[in-house]
Length: 259
Image (tube, rainbow, N blue to C red):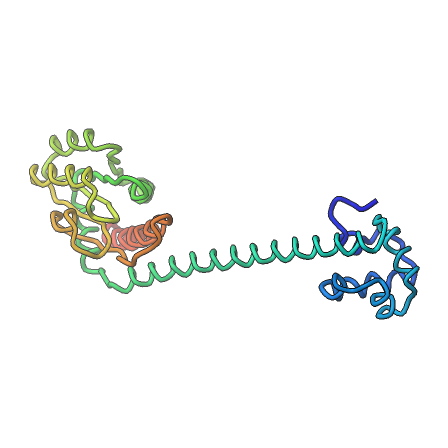
């Protein structure tokens, strides 16, 4: 009886104690699968140098009733494996493309050389009595990254979770506070509204957006930019890596001045 994995796996099955002739048949078939799917029983027998009867016995030995059924099963298995390999290659290619996009984004972001503004923002964080950070969507993960880094070294960060709470917070904040708004597009209406309230309060504002004109970058006192490379809209997390890179660089500058 043919096992559930198919005829090709049965040919490779090490638990079958093949005779010398059977080993020759199995080896030839595995080395020439595509050719064998188009061979008659006599052609296969001639190529392996055995009799057609030996081929028939071999088919029964691996659980296939006859050579015709064997060829059909072999062809089905072969094309199933080819399809699986093709899908795996596509997946590998897609993963490589994804990785290449991330690396390109990071390189473009890093090569903008924003050391001066990063140092200035680090100094503002160091002097501020309280720091508010707000972002939505994927940018919210960047917000959490800031909170984790600075809290780890004993510099608490206030994370704003939604617009209305943020409006209330910054409207009553001391003027020595600092507000950081994060939006990849730079056009988040919620982040813009809270930043506008912070500006009205006289609070210094910082934006982290992609490198192009936007309502948030133009409103903020200091702007940190990430790559503005276009990416697939279904894979917007690309931009998060660039935001995290700039946050790491900002954190590095902060550590230099806070010692």
